[in-house]
Image (cartoon, rainbow, N blue to C red; front, side, top):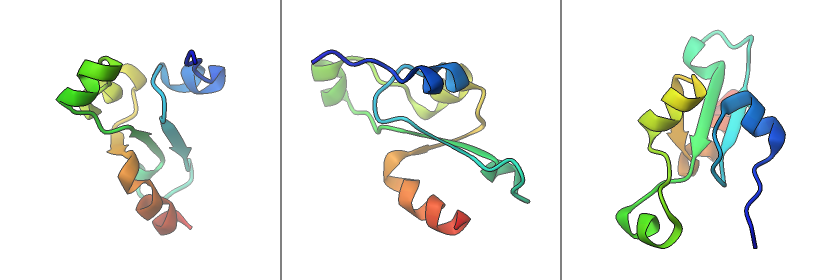
Length: 82
């Protein structure tokens, strides 16, 4: 099955990668939590089988979002925001 990026996600971040999440909280008192991007963790094995996945640094450069975390940290960050 072919992967098709959600056009809204691509418009907001420029990231064309599955399992990417963007959290926007523009009024949060902590500037690092106003915009957070969560990406899929990569490894050499994933690169071999699925192709290149963005690192945290690459995702930050592409999207302009300073706070980039891995998907396994998503639940903790959402709980702290709620």
